[in-house]
Length: 256
Image 1 (tube, rainbow, N blue to C red):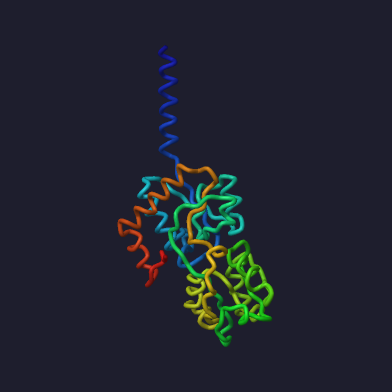
Image 2 (image 1 turned 135 degrees about the vertical axis):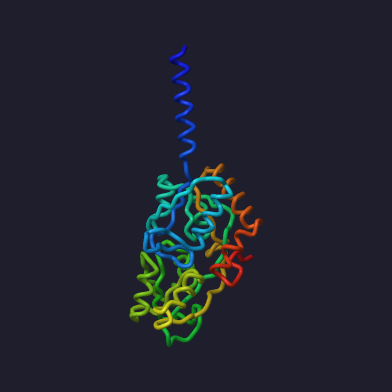
């Protein structure tokens, strides 16, 4: 009996230690996406989305870590349990909801075209007639292109936005199409100011562009979804969300 008691006590201690060491792993894209996330010289991720992650984890009283993979590898990596939640500016769309679940929205952004410095503004199918548009693979903008621009313009796909920016600056493409906030951030950079201009936001289509940005979850992971939803809601209600956002934005990033 004494041996059994010792074994049971050991098993309980092991289970307790395992529970204590458990953490929620947040998956992000492995390239800089300012102002949402970027690595500093020490290799540490920082940015608005990272600060929000930390606030959400504090609210959940959970230990959290970051796992970075390529953008088009995020959903496969989630499904193979390399991490627990995609936290990488991923739009909530009906198409993605066929494969994964999402938390409640934690911000929103329109979609934008940027062009060469001397290009005329315009973000309509007529404005892009005969032009080439650079788009990152596996994005909502690629779906939007297929619906609205494919009859007028050519699409050039890229693994990273940075590659698209380089080709736009070199004159190899006419536009880059992506989320408005990071594209506007690029236009503020020395490189962006020199080479490129704002062509304008495209007309919204929630059926294609989605209903905001949320955390991506494996289907059926209802416990984690409930915890994340409650934490995101609490961080917004407490004022912490606005406190973080004011460091990065002079507008309401949450949107409608």
